[in-house]
Every structure is written in structure tokens, then in C-alpha cells.
Image 1: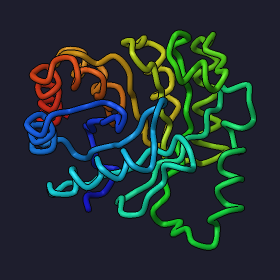
Image 2 (image 1 turned 60 degrees about the vertical axis):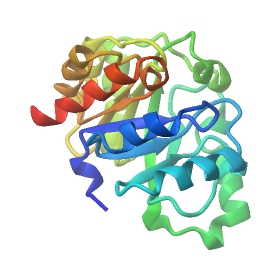
Image 3 (image 1 turned 180 degrees about the vertical axis):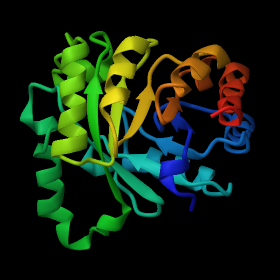
Length: 229
């Protein structure tokens, strides 16, 4: 499997959304560095397993971003574990992780786990509502979160998530400028090559999701950022 630190582009597939075999083939043979499987609503063991098996017929890394304990299935290359740092509910900081460790701690291969320090910035998105995230964040706040993730918690990934809308480049750059060891993921609202190019110039890795289901051709064009970054 490729070194995650070298990944510039990921497609994110939602197991609760339908995608044709033809479009899935286009996504998986596009040249993207990896496929992330994850979502907020209606994510189940059944639909995660179904999508994982479909993607595994192609030779690229596949990771599961865990949104609930019931949907965890073996067979992924990596498992991304979000801790939502701007959530007001401790459940989304460490509560779900605590429950997972109590139930499955003895069975976990910790070499397959990647902890993501999440900051959610779209107040209208489902995941912000679910986690009760404080999305009223300015440059000073995001710099402090970046320091927390990079220097204090020493997490491998900081994930800035705008989920459904295109984010503010100044905010993303403020975070990027504070990170020295942590890999910066950006996700949210990328719907064209131009937006992908803009965010790829700031973040280490961009994640492209919703546009796959809205305009597959535009989604595929975003992979071209790998040629310049």
C-alpha cells in the first residue's frame, strides 16, 4: 500500500449513496491515491461491506472513516478515527473511541488506525448538527486547533471539514502554516478542477466526495491536481 503521507487526492464514497458500476470503475481507475469510505447517515455494516468488496476489485488503498461502531468491518487497509475537536459533546471527542476499546480493544491492530483531529466548519451540514460543533471559528481559533493537533496531541492528521460547501482558503492556510508534522486534509464542496487546484496548493491532501454523485466528469477532473502537486 502507498505511504499515506504521499497521498495528494482521495475520493470519498458514501456507502448510503448509490453509484453505478460504471462510475465506480471510473473513480477507482482515475489515478486517485486512495478511496475513503464514510458518511453520516444510514451507514451500516451491510452497506460498508458491500462497497468495500466492490472497491477491492481495484488495486488501490481503501480506508474506512468510522462514524459508528456498528459499521466497522475487517478488510480495509486503514481505519480513520475522527476526534471532533470543536464538538461540544465529549462523545465525539473520545466517547465513541472509549466504547470501541471496551468492546474490541483486544482485537484491534493499532498499526491500521489513523487518528484525525477534525474541525468542522459548515454550520449547516449534518455532521455539524450531529456532533454539536462550534463552527464560529476565526483565524486565531484555527491556528490554536492546529497547534493542539500538531504540537500537543501530535495527531498524524488534521482534517478541516466544510462538508457540502467550499471552504475559506484563508482559514485553511492559517491551519497549514501552523503544521510541521501533521498532515492536513481538506474536504468540502470541491466541485471543479479549479477549486481542487486551489485547495491542493494549501492542504497536503484533498478529499473529493459529493461531486462524484452530482457530476462524475467534474469529479474525475480533480485528480489532475496530482500532476502539479
